[in-house]
Amino acid sequence: MLNSALSLPHYDSDVSVVAEHSTIADTSLGRLRGTRENGVSVWRGVDYAQQPIGPLRFLAPRPVPVWTGVRDAVAHGPLPPQGRSFVGGGRDDPKIRDEACLTVTVWSPDTAGSLPVMVWIPGGAFVYGAGQLQLYNGSRLAANGNVVVVNVTYRLGVFGGFELGDLGEGFDDNLCLRDQIAALQWVRDNIAAFGGDPERVTVFGESAGATSVLALLASPAAEGLFARAIAQSPALPLIADRDSRARQAHRFMQLLGVGADQLKVLPQRQLRRAAGQLQLESAEQTPTLAYGLTHGVDLLPMHPIEAARAAAVLPVPLIIGTNSHEASMFAWGKPPMLPTTPESVEGYFRRHAPQARDRVLAAYPEFPRRRAMVAFGSDVMFGAPTWAFSDAYSTHAPTHVYRFDHTTWTLKMLGLGATHGSEIVHIQHSYGSYLGRKLHPLGRRVQPSVGRRMQRTWLDFARAEIADWPFYGVDQRLTRVIRSTRDETVADPDAARRAVWQGLC
Image 1: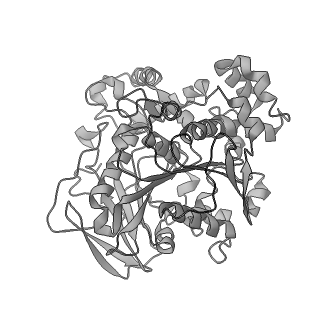
Image 2: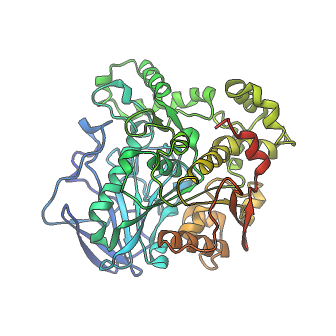
Image 3: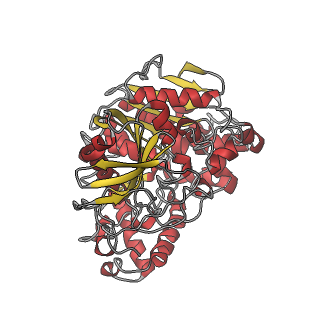
């Protein structure tokens, strides 16, 4: 374990790019030396908070002390502790994992400018992921759009995505969300040193990152930290009420067989094993999982859907959407936490809405065929909560809704369609990443038109220049359907399925 935020070593596994020369950023905390690579300045492994190790484990992030001299910011910091995943499976992805993981990566095409800023919150079910992964490399987004890009790495798993706030003193709630807010505060206070405008910040993320974006909209603590938001495939069932999380925390202590005072010093493996056991047990409460955010506390008083209905949200312009086959990849492994089998679908209704079973399944006439179960699982975790949030939020702020339908030939061959996360490579233009090469083997040489269109749209939105995309409202529910060669605006494209979920989210 690393011992000090001030002496934190950083690790760089991005060996595919050669630094051209160094560049210095004069932040409010001290000077940082980055590099200039392919026309874009980049700073890696920048601490945005003190590292949460030793007595700071399970506590809210603390500010970084001011330093003298020049610190190197040329190598990635560690990933949060996590298992292996295909998202970060490339040889150029960092391999070091440690609790001392609160860092950002910054890309800037013009350090003397005052450019729009895009802050990326990666997903991974609050268990996997990190801002350093090549799938999320922001260099092309920064260069193509003349924007400053900031990727956030925050605590995951038992150290950040697992709720222990009800254990008392020494344990703060919603640690991953608190980390993200600390990163946004760092952006507000320091991004001008990198050529960014703190008044023009767009926060965007996918999956758990998009869930976090919607939670930020519902958190009073995030007010004033960003001006626009983009949520790609949010999974709002990952947000549970405080009582449920408290019961889980005490079950966690039972499994460990220790007192709360010992959690600060227990080995990572022991903590992660107990939390993993609770994740398996959470299948009985699907789709609410053991890892995620908690509402009913000061940081997040209400679930984002309820906050939007009560006008208790930050009313900033929003892009929100889902992919047409969100659950197809998950259905391969038949996970008990996502209802994509006949047994798990029936179990879902027994626990949550037995009276609605026949009415809801009527919208999936092919049930129990695989196609219908994939659609059902997609709607439980992603579609239905997103429709409910969009309906409520659009009454308070400008809202654009999309559905991503583009399918690569590789995904077609696998029978997956536009599965969860498959839009990321097109927005980031990360076709050279491990996952990007799998999805689009020729993407590095011939960028697909869907990628050019999506990246341009996201950048236009961040610059407040978006055009030709009507606002969403409950009168027509106009939705941009993103296809391989063109986009089309459609009124309520999933009307039959959306309607049967009203009142259940």
